[in-house]
Image 1 (spheres, one colour):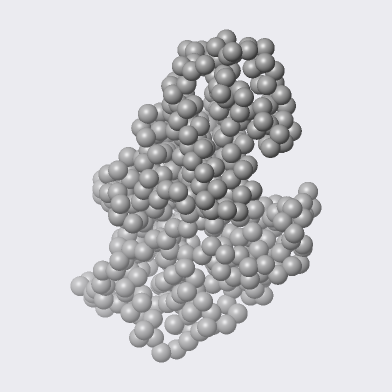
Image 2: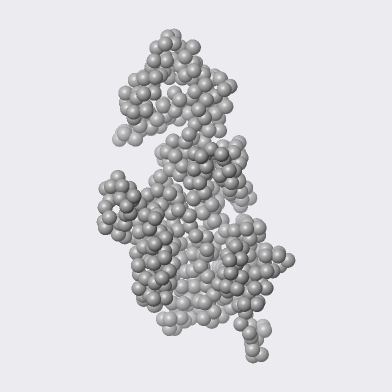
Length: 491
């Protein structure tokens, strides 16, 4: 499911709290890469034929051509039935005599990988599992030697297999390099199955300091360009594969928005200016877009920034009396509006510490949590502050509503963006929205969220396949780490 990109606004809260002296803070961005489910198909679709011919034995090279063809057909039948143990008997003969089949098909290599992967998954002895893994890697190398024109696909699928099926046999840097080699070769023509795992690894490599900003910027751009190209495909299945990428990669790449200078001004104007255009007199929308464009270092002469600023001065600036000191230090709200997010956080945190009454502390904590969620995309820290707000003002709907929204938007942090692991985050979200419904000020919004996300719940069939029933108690892991109630929908 796609996450709503609207960031929560902070105007009403910050206007109600006092100005503070700013101090520079530090950015904290968290990532939790999905590992449980694949992000396109379990087995990426290979090129079906190779017109340039094979570089290894074919049926014509076999000692007994008719027998080789017969073994090939029998192997195919057993693989299609899922009888991999039986298929292995025929596959060994075909692989020895004519691994290239008719010289235009790579199916023998694909079957071999499937068969040894089956052995791997059903083996409990660690040494034997490693042997099966090594055989899979050997078949990939044989495939590449036999059909060199399949190079990018073979390398991509090999990296895909290691990332999802054999992650313990390579570190993240090695996996990143495998995928990067494919993207370097294919550019915007990179296949869909490469993009989601590479996105995860790209973010991880940057966050751990293994790569620098220019490299991360380069490949973030390539991912988005390849996605754009793939969505234009005339092939229905190709478009469907890229639509899965669309539900994951762009949302994960939003994490780079928290890094000053990573994206240029045009990125932010193209992505967020529409929020202002929807209602040019809405101060919340104006504040959100204005602070975002200032954070993006859009020049003062930028036409869109100029338009938003003019709307702010027209609709949102309160008249200042003659007693207002023009030399006063900027308030927390001023800092946020100017895109000085870290300074605004320092200002608000200082205000929270100085506040003496629960109501004010709650407002400060909520404002801080809102920024960590909307601007910093640090969900754990955001939740911590929102929960502080609830300790000072129990039953307040706005923090509960926002925590629920955070959970619901975590499908790409806790899974691939689709499927079970990405859907179950809605359960704890609904817990929070149910709490928000008890506050008259947020009741309507909370119910709208519940209604909106019901369609994304796992089905009863999904639960049945995992031994989970509607109403069961269930712990959602990832960063959420909350026990919730299972909610399943009818098909």
